[in-house]
Every structure is written in structure tokens, then in C-alpha cells.
Length: 144
Image (tube, rainbow, N blue to C red; front, side, top):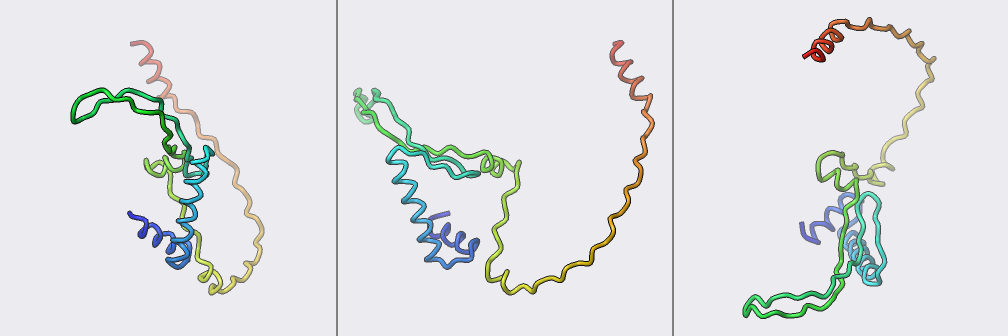
């Protein structure tokens, strides 16, 4: 997915036009970049954290000549995914559904209040007798 496709998906999900979604996406990217450049941490709950990490100076090799070169210390952006995002990607958690569009909510007719019913009585819980066969099996396993 490229930036244009992402803006289209945001527009569809949020009920915006493409230019509004693209402007919001650009504003998000610019804000994250400027804050991380300053050394600030940008956290989006449920998504992840953008941070600036420091790379130490080190020795490297020129791949063409094989000579040793000194690589200066530098800063690099880093992203750490949040637990919710990791769960969605791994398939352990369900993704949140997009919020309903405002236009569709306005068109929907208001529902009539349902008549209140008397609360149903709870039936007495029955206890099932404990199975003795399971106890015999576990005792047999212990003897082996």
C-alpha cells in the first residue's frame, strides 16, 4: 500500500474526501517526524511508539575496496509496535471496526423505546455428582 492508497483507505473509513484524508495523513507524518527529530517520544496507544535512537561510532568496511573506514555516530528513527497492534498482526486479537459514518447515522430513523419486561427468575443451579471414574484413572497413573 502506498501513501495515496492509504489516504483513500482513511477517507473511506472516516467518511472524508481524499484531499481531507491526505491532509490529515501529511499532518500526522510531519508531526511525528518533527517531534522525533527533537528527541521526543510519540506514542499512539494501541498502535505503537516512535522514538529516536543513537547509533555509536564504529568501524566498517568499504565493500568495493575492503579498506576499513570509520562510521560516525548518528541518530536513527525507531518504531516499537504496541501490544494491540502485535495481537492484530499475529491473529490473536480482532481489529476494531471503523466508526460509522456521520451521514449514515443522521439518516437512520430513531428507534422506539422497547417496553420494559419483568426480569426473568433464575432457575436454581443443579450440582452434578462428581465422577469417580476420573479419580480412579488419575490414581492408576500415579502408581505407574
